[in-house]
Length: 345
Image: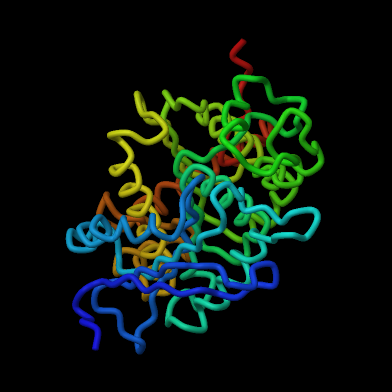
């Protein structure tokens, strides 16, 4: 009988039509897990050369973060999708890793665990190659995930193969499907799997879904992954898609900053879970007071509320609204989240 007061790693295999022996996977179950509860579920996509064993190795770290209250309890699952799969649905049908993760694996986990039973409690994250995979999967299916977090994602800075120079092809020599990575790769395959291209194609769906997006990368990444991540940040900015972006000074592709960065990403994911839960909670006294004031058309003095509360910001935004609308008459970009900035060159 397992000790529910401790976390545990469970190993299994999931049959797939392209993998008759099954796809190995690991599930990290948090301390206190109870089938009668409802938990968030995070799909964690491993990096190049990785496997489900990476999640098992992270168990002591997650235990520390749960004990410290850095992140809420959640079920975390990782499948061994091939050393350099890039979470690709192969054109020849020999493997379909993207579909497997987004559909087969997720459905199997939901059937076996009381976790991720709805979009609001379903998260996806990835590291390096896995960050690339997590982004392209989430951007293609924004109505399926509440949040995506990409840690040092292996991205290339451009929409098309012709945009990519030698500086951003260093990782091509490490391995992977030649049709996706290589001197004579399939340009159409690269473009159709490009997270930036998927963000552009599905911008309205992403915006309407409220998908929360987290990007982070070191500015000294030896594979120059910061170029591609910066490009995606600018794409999201221009598309006016809300996201959090962290460029870490002096950080490389791994190294001494790696564990704190994983911690920060999961703390952020945990904050999204908390945010989703708060959205369905009863309004606070401050929120009720501000809502009543808004119903009165801002008539009378604004209610005294905690300056550190969300209600206080709601009140300030309401007071600024006339000025914002007036500015929008001559500058429509005023109504955007992000401004349309001048070129820096």
